[in-house]
Amino acid sequence: MIFTILKKELKSYFLSPASYIIMGLFLAITGYIFYNLIISFVENTQHIPGKYRSGLDFVNHVTIQLFTNINLFLLIFCPIISMNAFAGEKRDGTLDLYFSSRVSDFELIIAKYLALLVKGSVLLLITLIFPALLWSLKTPDFSFVISGYLGLLLNVTAYMSLGMFASVCSDNQVVAAVISYVGILFFWMISWASQISSNFLYSTIFKYISLIKHFEIITKGSLYSSSLLYFFSFSFIFIILTKMILSSRKW
Image 1 (tube, rainbow, N blue to C red):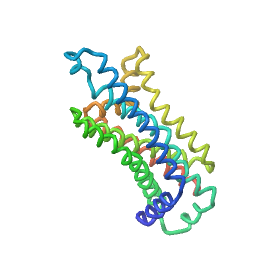
Image 2 (image 1 turned 180 degrees about the horizontal axis):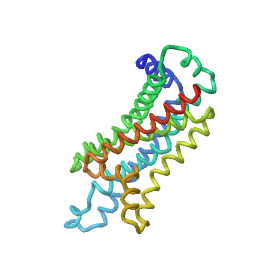
Image 3 (image 1 turned 120 degrees about the vertical axis):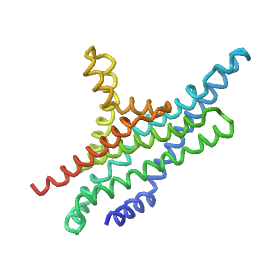
Image 4 (image 1 turned 45 degrees about the vertical axis):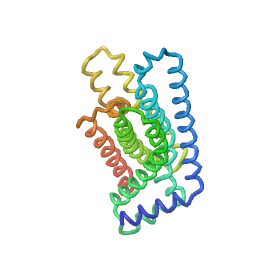
């Protein structure tokens, strides 16, 4: 049943003109940013004496900045993609069809979540043109591109799990998107609290539960089991919360 629902979700999404508008906007915005990062790097390089140009770090000025900006726009686009997961079904009254069928709540949630991951991954796939261009420029430390995409993919798993939870909490898609935005921003901005807190324990806790901190660590080429465990736990918790909300109809 999971595969059947997954197939239905993806077919419905990729047959919708709105999905291609979303992908087109995402590629256009990130492409504009990529272009400006390259132009800015070239202009800065030209103003530096030849013997010092090798010290200008392409990875920090272009590669990492590109992934940071892509991640920023994933924060905007993922809630738009995920807002329809359950809210749309509630609005159309089709969710009751699942409830009356043999499919379990868990199967429905996993199918919806996998569909969201595929949709989010497609956004990343269309940006592969950027590393292809970087490869043609023979830029150094191409391994940072791999770690950057790994960080983005892990963030997608987190954004989509939270977005799915937001969607099951409301039958209004706009409300679901707003809840998702607020939730993601909370896990972004909690890192600020770690910087201003004078309590070492609180600062450490805030830093660990911050999405952006783990993303930055991975993007810079450091892959720790604690970060992988964080993203797994993040998605698992919101999947369980989604299951609890969905099952509340039986109470």
